[in-house]
Length: 167
Image (cartoon, rainbow, N blue to C red):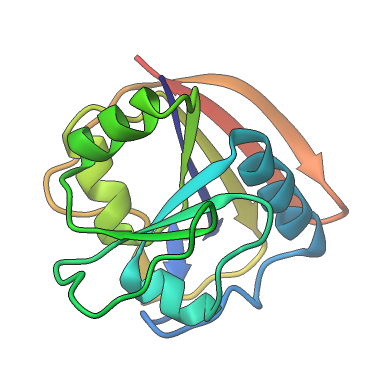
């Protein structure tokens, strides 16, 4: 199972200035890559806070929302599912259902959980030409991974897309 972490980051490694910030600071080209990659995989896993900044299921793919409390949350067949399963259980469930790739779409806590459990196989990081100084880091809490750079490409005029595999 391919598990791809997808994130736009500032030059100083932040995914947002704060946990409520929309992804409106990222480039058009990054958004286009995000849509294509998540639709190709067919499923995106994200945390509840990230989902709430989006406000609706992303069309054309299954949206799996990780939350500690699924009570009272309504699933939409083939579009939106809430889960309190652990990352390994989510991956096993989605693989059993026929998915061969999963995109992890944020936020920092979710990225860190999947990395700590050694589930991530690929990282796609769009480095955007901004510096936040403070804010939400890509990961935290004892995550250590060695990576191999697979490719780097310019996205538009200002951003760079880095593709790494986990060693």
